[in-house]
Amino acid sequence: MVYKDILDFHKIPNTLLEEEFWSQKKTGRKTAEFLPISEEFSQEFMSDWLRRIEDRTYLKYDTLFLETPDVLSKLRKYNLVLVTLRNDKQNLFWELDKLKLTEYFSEILVGLPTSKNKVELVKKYLKGNSGRNNCVIVGDSEVDVYTGKKMGFLAIAFTNGIRSRAFLSKAEPDFYIDNLNEIFKILNEYAV
Image (cartoon, rainbow, N blue to C red):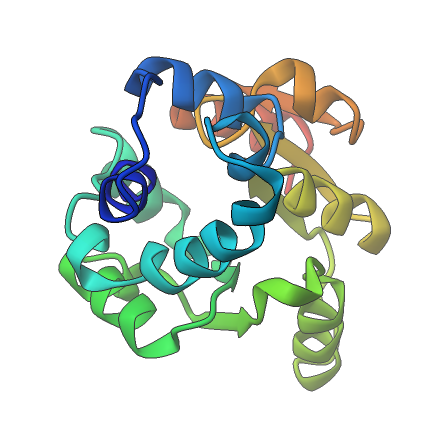
């Protein structure tokens, strides 16, 4: 885990278990807010975190939910577009290739995380593609849900990702799914 390696590097004792770490992340708290670090070190920690989190050393540990390939394969007919915020585009595409995800998407839109906004990426894409009707956004973060709502899309919050249902509820998604297969019922119901 990135946070453990940073704390070890700076010889700061870590008392936080991995389960506790993820429990805190799901509430939307920034990592530096709940780790045993000083306020002065917080800035350095976050800088180191951002530098490391997209490094292949850590990306290689990312895995897919079991149902992901099957669900994406069935959804491919909908012209899937991946919208993500990353600092390192090269490592993003390395990871997508490693996970065999690239083939499922007609487009992959990448913006910088500092923007905390996917709306402009989506607007630019839609403008270049004569707009699209019946758009749906599925995501596991508040940024995903806010983007969907701002664009007037159906916004579906995936609750088994980086954020909890309780946290995502603040963004007011149209639907919640706990399992990726649940998306088909929503798409069928709304004739997307």
